[in-house]
Structures are given as structure tokens and as C-alpha cells.
Image (cartoon, rainbow, N blue to C red; front, top):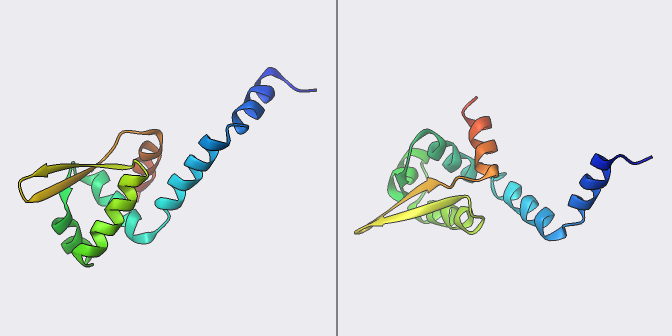
Length: 105
């Protein structure tokens, strides 16, 4: 016997596009470098590519690639200030989960 709640949850699972999007978002933050970037952006309002690269100890190119992936997944947003690009976490359900978990570390 199915309850109203069970039927609603089953209906939600039929939204394939949303399930795929969610899986992709979680896959994106599963990479250790991306997770480090997310952690830093949880702790600091915004950081430049150069600052992140220096802190993590990887190349600017690697950080740019990582940030591009995070931006494609709609996890970060950027702001250009002349020659510098600053990144911050976007407000979304996923970033709230990531932020809540990472700030406990």
C-alpha cells in the first residue's frame, strides 16, 4: 500500500534530467583538488585563481581547469577585476551541503 508521500517521491525520481544533474554535481566535488577549492571558498568570501593555486600548491593552469569544471556545474561564479578573476561559491542546495560538511572539518 503506497502512501501519498511514497507516490510523490516516486514521481520525483522520474525526473531523469534532475537526477543526472544532481549526480554530475556530486561527481564534480568528488575530486580532491575541487574539494580543496570548495573548502577554501567556504572559508573565504572570494579568492583569485593565483591565490588558490599558491595555497593549494598546484599550477594556475590546474586551478583554472578545476574552476572551469566547478563553474560548468554551476557551483562557483566569477568576478573580473581588471586582470584578476575572483571566484566565490554560488548559493545553491549543493553548495549549502558542501559548505555545511566542509566547515565541520
